[in-house]
Structures are given as structure tokens and as C-alpha cells.
Image 1 (tube, rainbow, N blue to C red):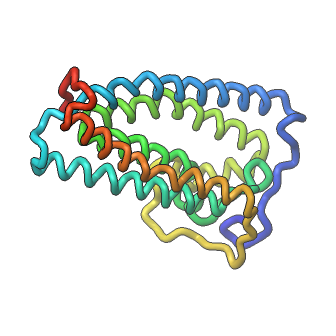
Image 2 (spheres, rainbow, N blue to C red):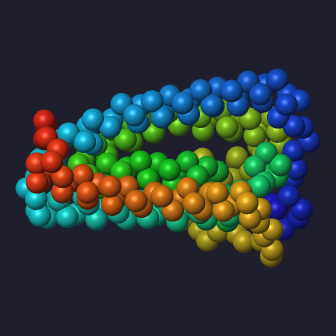
Length: 223
């Protein structure tokens, strides 16, 4: 539904019926594959490096705690956004909930999760690297997603884009519809995926323990 409480705008075309939309979707899939390959390339850094500051130092605690907080925010935020978008993507122009504050809440919370991964390993360098990977892999995807939505929904989306920022949320309360039908199957899948995000912190703690007891070699120290 839109902010006036009227019935939501629905797409007047399908993905398969518009070559431009199909092309944009294909490039988005390729970009997602690139992101996964870049993340795969960072695995040795997480396995065989350690943070430079002493164990138990204030910086160590602050970074680890910050990482856990960001991972929890990312998981909760993605669940919140999925509640509104699950089963409606490309069918309705969703403008309530987190989508009334920012146009791309799923990407925003994913970005926080990427940063949280690096901080969970108590390293600013790894957090910065994950932020760069997100920017390289996802920012072009965000732009293409918006192009695709503009084709799907036309002027209603352009009006929405003019009043709601792309990535930095507006400081205001979100709008909430009177009722919100939920696609349980799609939302359940999103819920399961989001629930895995905080487990990164558990993995980071296990890997840190393995390095401290020398089960894993440390080949470099990172700030």
C-alpha cells in the first residue's frame, strides 16, 4: 500500500514480457555471483590472520561487541523488511514499514551485516574489506534493481523515489498498514536465512579459540 492508505500499485508487466527488465535481472545474478566469489577469496584471511591488538584489550572487546550488535541488527532488520516484501516483490510497490524510511532496506541491513562480519573477528581491516566487497558487488546491483522497478511500476515508483532516500534512512517513524497479508512460505525462508547471520559471531569465536591454542596457524596480524 502507498502512504495514503490506498491499494498498492501493482506491476502492469511481468519480468518475462520486458527484455529490458530481463536483461537487468540477468546482470544482477552475475553481480551476485561476483560477490560470492569475492567473499570466497577472503576465507584465508579469516582463517589464518589475527587481530593486532592484545587479547582482552578494550579495543578487542569493543570491536567484537560492535560486530555482534551489527549482526543482530542485520538479522532483525532483514526479518522486518522480509515481512513486508516476501511474496510481493515485483508484484506490488511496497512503501510501508522499513520501505517508508529507505528504498533498499534489505541492502542496508546486509551492508551492516557485512561490516559486522569483519568486526566479529575484531579487525577494522577485515570490516573495511567486507564493506568494500559489498560496495563492489552490491551497489551496482542496487542501481539496476531501481532501474528494474522503475520499468515495472513507472511513475508511482518515480514518486516514491523522490520522497524516500535510497540508502540512508529518514529519521522518522515508519508507516504501518492496517493489515499485512504475509506469504508464509517465502517469509519462512527469509526468516531461516536471517537467523543464520548471528552464527557468524559464533564461528568467529571458535576460530579465534583455534588460533589461540595453535590449532590454526596465524600468518599475519591485522589492525
